[in-house]
Image (cartoon, rainbow, N blue to C red; front, top):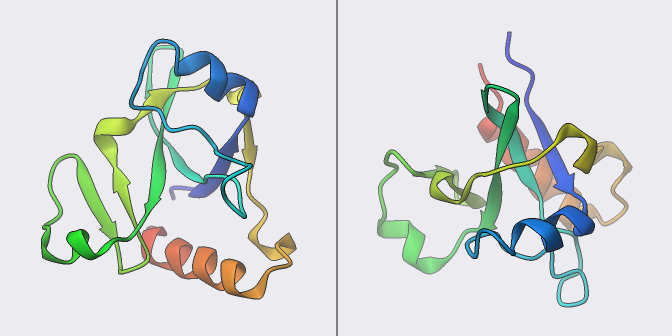
Length: 119
């Protein structure tokens, strides 16, 4: 059975990795209410773990089909696999959805998790 988790990546590591990959999005803590979430670990190659960011669902996504590098998570969010990046486990923290105080955000994460969780 596959264990699925949502993660947060440390700001320190994001600041480091964007120097090498301009597609990695900043956590933008000052510009958002909640830190960016990632789904993973999607793939492990040799000693590297790769993780993909969850992005907000936008109007343009309604007419897009899932494909090799784009997956809709219901109408809640999308996963852009082409934006995966390597991250050491030491720079990850598992998101404990049950501990999130904001009810609306908690409901969103729970819905995303239900859609993503392997059956």
